[in-house]
Image 1 (cartoon, rainbow, N blue to C red):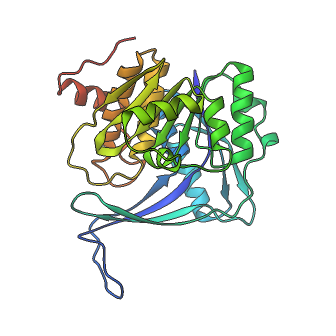
Image 2: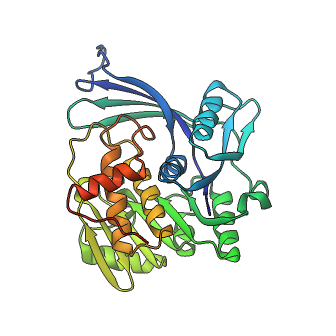
Length: 304
């Protein structure tokens, strides 16, 4: 059983400060860390730490950041054969300033310069043994090709919809599980009500649609019913990557055959734990951590 992922990967530098500095001032950093990031990549790191095999397709440059991204994913046991290096290109990087109290963050990022993954570069070995495809839609042509190819092969697909981008509406209608950030729904005109969410979700076409709402939990629409799962309150240090960790936990629960609500609860616990650490991937929890977190709150982990 292999989870395949397609999308963005990044090298993040994070600095913890007391408060965001005003112009022409200086701020001393507490923690200063560097680690991998990116929506699809972080989701796969989560799945790998929970104990499943993973394979990632994406693009880096032949720079130092690209080498660090590749090494970090490989160190998690993720197959990076399909992570392609573009000669002469710069990898995506981000600088993230996190306020010590409350976990608010400010992100400055640099777009990668390498050509996007082309559909023809998703060769046959990428699909071998795939039990699930996860993608973030940030490479439009490759993403649309990937979801169509997965459907042809009978592989379920989860799409991470961060916001409305070219091709995202079509991806939403082709996938099995749409997991959207609140901004994606706002881009569609969501008024914040559960009833309006239900109408929007039903119109998107995915059999299962979930929207994550930060500390307000999540809403999931399936089979004509809507389910709200509250967030687990934690003393958050940093929320960077929490949504991506949610996707990984959700995928894991689905592949274990858990009921939908239980998979979402597990994903919520994984996301909460990730907020206790600085950065997207450092805090992605392992299975025993999530299980202990849930048991401590009187919630049993399904055994299927």
